Image (cartoon, rainbow, N blue to C red; front, side):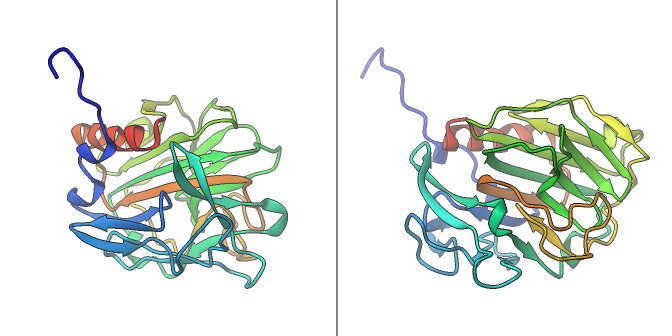
Length: 266
């Protein structure tokens, strides 16, 4: 109709799976995702509101499913509708709810690494918890005051972000070890905007050799001693996770963030 703007839908943007080196994709927006015309299960079971999630399926084709550690009672639950009519995985800290992956050789010794997490923590306590991080502190975590992002144990950047707990946000992590200087090697993006980081240590040139990757909680005991996140858990929702085993270009960052923004209405 003349004079009426066409509606924009998230599927009009480039789906993440068309970009090279998408090595992990968790999508909690629904029970299934259609990838390249094939319907793929997002979890190990068909989900409705309240379903316990013991495994979150990687729909990138990489086979990097995450599983609950600790058995029955430690599983997060599926919640829907939560954001823009879509579902999410809901974590409760008092139950030590968690999902993790081991081994993660596919994330080791890389000169580039990109993470996106679409999440809404419902509380930001004075204690720490992982959003997505490894036993070598590669990733994103709440440090008890602000958000931090790290490349290896003792080498990380801290933001001044204290963000609200009423909305979903886009958390982005871009590591490029081919660059020079901490600020060029590690960038933390929040709702599509680069954040200023105060660095501790020196950001290295590779991802190192992590063995475990944690989503929303670290229930591995002595594993993950770098920033003392062992035994810490989040309260809140994770809607989607994307990991690329390289640093995305500026145009790829824009297209990926447009896909996320429109899909989740952030």
